[in-house]
Image (cartoon, rainbow, N blue to C red; front, side):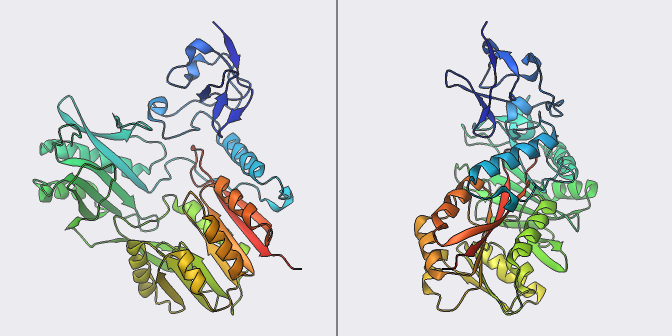
Length: 433
């Protein structure tokens, strides 16, 4: 058998072998027999000389699930790896301008929104998680990064659905009732919103099911049925029916209140979300007479937090549902110095005829387009605060801006412990002649 030693990681998580193969869950310096590679990874029991950063894996489906990348690595080392990765993406930024990575106070059970998918095992409905990159569902309700109460609620729901003989949807036959169950939890108020995703309108005994679930979990305040009428990988479709309680639950950030529906976009790690937004506002150094343009503004979270510091916020979002939630949140909080605009962000920037002091942008994972960045340079705001869920595309975009802007500060926030994902906030200032 050929013994192999991992020299370095590539793609931020895989060991690259001499023959070009990538192997997951191996750390630099660790050795293993090449014959022990199975399904692209090496089980921790097959590692011949474990790294000092390797820890006991707390999840029994870690290797088969694939949802977590780093459960086998100590959290301190995860943070070091992420910080090193981000610094490597910005070689021309003085490391003194890059803040130390901000880790989570508790890297477990942080997700306040979770999806469980229904499958059938031994003629019973089981809820579980997809194997990464496949349609296979692993029956399991003890995810280490999901909120504990959400996990407990999933277990109750699975039991109650079976008591009423509710069947799991089968994609091959296009038969069965429940496709998914989605649970969202308010961090501050601890209330829960449960969504049953069903194949068609039929949901027998839903009143009795809800009664059992809410009796066991009284913090469940809203129950929604999301109705699918087609085969689709999309979890939440547009058609919904309110089954129990108000349409939304509420969460608070400081003195602001936000209404969350089943389909609202809201960060799943609320503690680190607050850290991220506080860092962005601190970087911006906002003044009372500033006019701020918030691009990709979503449900208005950042806009509402910024509004108290400035004269005016113009928030632009192209998703009608998110825009509607933003308008509702503005009204609920009695904030009158924000204009929420439903528009393509680039088109709106081309129409602006006023001076913008600061642009805050939080684009999707793929980052900004070249034409967007060109328009942004023409707008010439004094400062840009760029929030990113993919530092790689952020680094690419900042490079495209470097003839006009320079990086003043960069912060790294570990929004998703035990995964390869990390969020960054960059402060860019307009270069002077």
